[in-house]
Length: 209
Image (tube, rainbow, N blue to C red; front, top):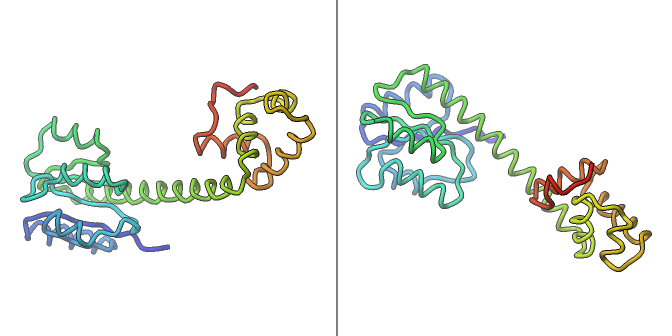
């Protein structure tokens, strides 16, 4: 597994150096930048980790970078640090997805805890994305007819009802269901429904008990 990277963006050299040293002593791999633009030039979205980000920066500031990353599909966890924080600013950052908001001078233990939590969150999020990607690959193996049958199955309909709605016989639906179970690698109907729901197929309140 690739080692997580702690990205650090702060325009004050002394603070950037001190925080980088603290993190490296704690065993983290750190890449430090003086600006958001410099960070974006080097950032690889495929690299796991988190971002420690100063809020007030020349050029692109912290909350603008947060919005840019979100708009471009990045889920990199962000820990804001600032010497000019206030409650509304903190609330906006957290509401927009930041995992922590710390004020300078930064408490070392609080920062290290936040980094640990952010990296754990990123790892779990990436694992979830991989899982969904694998389910999508299985779903792509289904024929258009099997995909149609799957929707009805997830909605809790019986083979007989599905056959009637699709204008075929119950035996054919049973064959489709067996192939769907095999291609989706589902060991039970409950597992098949769970996999389908992860792809947004069906509605939780439409399935029968």
